[in-house]
Structure formats: C-alpha cells, structure tokens
Image (spheres, rainbow, N blue to C red):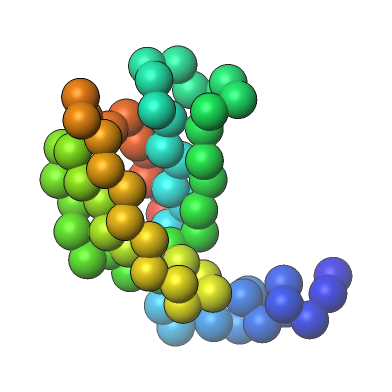
Length: 74
C-alpha cells in the first residue's frame, strides 16, 4: 500500500466517496468507458454531469443523446 491509499482509507471514515463509470454508448466495459473517483456531485442530469474528483479537479461531462452512467458508493 502506498501513502495515497492509506490516506484514502483514513478519509473514507469521515466522508463518502463514489465510483462513477461513464459509458458513451449503451455497452459498459468497452474502450470508451471512463471511471472517476468522485468526492462531490454538483449536478446530475440526464445529459449533464458536474462533479469534483478525488484530486479536487472539477469535471463536466455532456452528452447530446444522454449519458449512461453508474454511481457506486465506496
């Protein structure tokens, strides 16, 4: 275990983290999927997601036909 993993385990006792998997088509598990560890969601809509990652980076994802995403609590 490196220092970052230990720190994440300590922080996880005090705040909830989420694993977000975004697929740009209807099939999960293929090459176009993106996975993020999310600290905080700002907006969750059918065609728009805005959130803050573990590294405090703000990410916005848009999809014209809608987004296919899964949110899992860690």
